[in-house]
Amino acid sequence: MTSPDLKPPASATPQPTPAPEGRRSLAVAFVTLLVIGTDLFVVSPLLPEIAHQYHVSASVAGVTVTTFSLAYMIGAPIIGSLADRVGRRTVLIGGLTLFGLANALTGLSPWFGLLLAARVLAGLSAAAVTPSVQTLVGLAAPPERRAGWLAVAASGFLISLATGAPTGTAVASLLSWRETFFGIGGVALVLVVVNLFSWRSVGAVGAPGSTPATTATARSSSLRKARAVSVTGLWAFSVYSLYTYIGTALTDNAHLSTGMVAAALIIYGVGAVAGSLSGGRLADRYGATRVVAGSLVSLSVLEVLLVLAFHTPTALLLLVLGLFALSAFPCLPAFQSQLMHAFGREIGSVMAWNSSFMYLGTSLGSAAGGVLLSSAGFSWIAPAAAAAGLLGALVHARWALPVGQQV
Image (cartoon, rainbow, N blue to C red; front, side, top):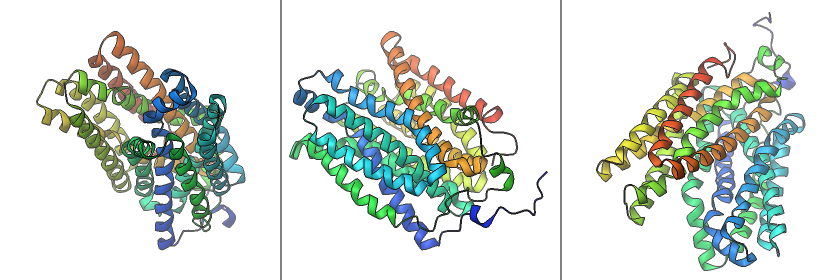
């Protein structure tokens, strides 16, 4: 057994980031993930114009979203392993540079094939940026506030859920869809410079508070990594199999007006951000294991209650929708904090696997929800989504992380 007094070499121990610089870096991480999320969610309202521009159907234009997601899912684990070898800051800067150029190419593309290639590059570069930012935030954070810092960074991505589509619509209405991507690319290139000076005092390797035991076992198999992050995949399946079709159900089942549907989605977005931020604070105070388990179980219960709430007054329906988001999103920062504790030196690749499984769970959940919606109706999505959430809680408790590596 390893002596508790034995300390890792100085070169393997990240130096604590000074508080003011750490807070500035956290703000940079928030904005960076906001821009990455905007690029993902901005495409949907632009699809009609893109389809018209290239003389393709709306469904064919939608392949741009699919190619981005597939490139992210496939590329993230590979790029994450590279980040563990050459440094997360290096991969972040390279990925953010490519992300800016890929968005510029998206706006410049004269034919549809080149547009698809640009979206593949954007997906690969986003797969380099997002896990690297999350890892650097975890390394920079004080150990006792790590989950809270991860939650603040993640809230940038969550806010883009609500702001991405309106931003794209506004810019496209004033100029054209191409300028939307030029703008994202330009902001990304500015963020290259900002990030270049934001992470210089963050340790190159090792997780905060990592011990020789965790770093010694860091050369983990792909199976062990996939097993751990399967919790995130099940969480994403549970949430997005239902959320993807909330707008449709609010219109067709609850008969809400367009304005009320927009208000409902804003309530959901506020609940998601509040849930993420509160989840980080709760994990730091009471332990991440409790927060992850509580979030997965409560979101499953509220999914069933949400379907029942469609037969109640609108105010109660909106309340339950907000509570659903509030209960669902504490899981993410809490579980990311657990991963950082468990995987030591390979946290870059594990966070990449985590991001990849989140995209995978989202895609599979949306597909499964669509099948259930068309074949059985919206009310049948909730039991399947709730079952996935409860399965995630069981996997988290019994299988995902070895005993002794949960916090």
